[in-house]
Amino acid sequence: MTTVDQRHRTTPPAPRRRSRREEILEIAVGLFASRGYHGVSMDDIGSAAGVTGPALYHHFAGKEAMLVAALIPVSESLLEGGQERVARHPEDAEAALADLIDFHVDFALANPAVIALHLHELDRLPEEPRRQIRRLQRLYVEEWVGVLSRVRPELAAPEARVLAHAAFGLMNSTPFLGGEVEWRRRADLLRDATVHALTGH
Image (tube, rainbow, N blue to C red; front, side, top):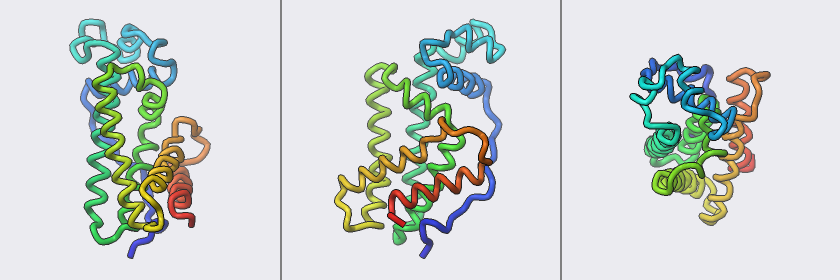
């Protein structure tokens, strides 16, 4: 059986080629995360991306559309990725938990600006996309709760849910981490802290 503290990634995930729309969105997310949603204009985004107004609006209707485009796909990808990793280990809950932790640590290290955006700007969204994101998040949490309840059957589901949210707090601390510690070591530290928070060892 694979234990939750034996899995170690040795390199950051390889980047893939991005579309121009994805490049603009990444620039917008970075600006929103550093200056706040209201501190950034469409002109600021266009200037940073080297795109004029009409070309920028060809990709996005406005800042709100950018915020939706940044947060909904991330929530969808987390849920799909979490479900996929749980499905890999139908008979081995500890391996499933290890896989979930690896998956989320990699995500958190690769996307600190998106995490910051979610923490500070989610309430800027209209009600419907905000509700959609909240629903996706709840489903993702329940993937963790289900696995953790199998690893630690002494926990009631609400207790497992508390621990899952605590684990997200640890892993989603990446917007507040500097670059003093290299990627592999940061990943190991976050992984080990999460394992300890969830399992007690």
